[in-house]
Length: 374
Image 1: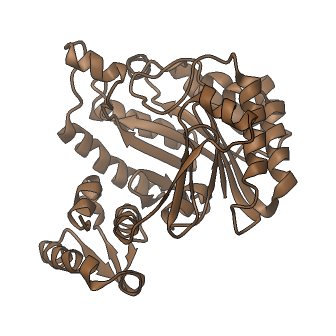
Image 2 (image 1 turned 90 degrees about the horizontal axis):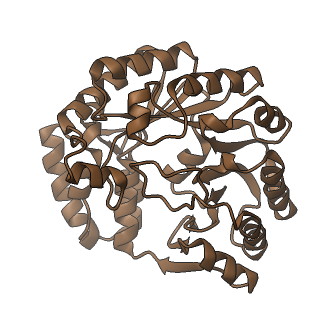
């Protein structure tokens, strides 16, 4: 599978620390550099038949439909597409006007991931989103009108401007709009963001973990009652609408990341990442030099990643594979901690897969880290 990072946004959200630029001055040069990178790295994927192509960011919907299609055509020069390929475009509601959607509907894009975040203006203002509540709803309806059925939306819970009743209304609206996939995250205060600054100055109240916990578990029960699979800590889908792209990440499959700050993985022990600087990225690719760093993952790194990723999913960690792949020196601490947590009910084993019971998923990362080899 292939991920393409579009490092541009109209404005900066208060909570975001991803790599992007609000200036489109070098957009053409960036797109040319990405095409060059696709060519230079065309032999890195063992499987040339692609089952998923994902445009993330940043905000890929700041590009025109023609620019998006040109990148798809570039990929097709060196790879083939599976018959049922999933091609996802992340998009902001304010970009999804009739003209853009009409052009997208003629393109190979067959899945939209819409950055809704909330259907309430107060939440959206705190997050410094470029859209308002009515645009959030209207963009989804417009996308459906243009034939996009495979839709995902992002929702953020636990905001200081929200509460459980508002969160319930957000979820009810999602069901009413017949969205088949939801990615939902607790509002997190990241370093060097506007939100962190506002909280430090007392302008905004720090999000309350107990409120986020309450909203998280309400969401689980509510969405399951409405036919959703809770297949990863932050992801819910109707049957047949699981994100193929993200599921491949969670199952340790190989992927190629194109664009500044994009990551790649060979499926076993090599990870690489591109420089998170637009100008450096463009300059290097103009000289036919890859703007990336590479690391060989140690046995310890591979083990910790398998634990972290596996325990965040409904599939869990394959214990047979773990025991075959890693030595006793790595497994000793894991086995001891696992035994303790099994006795406490924080972990369970089903069909030789280690899992976290759903009632403890809010603390999944902390539970996983206790099992790490350090």
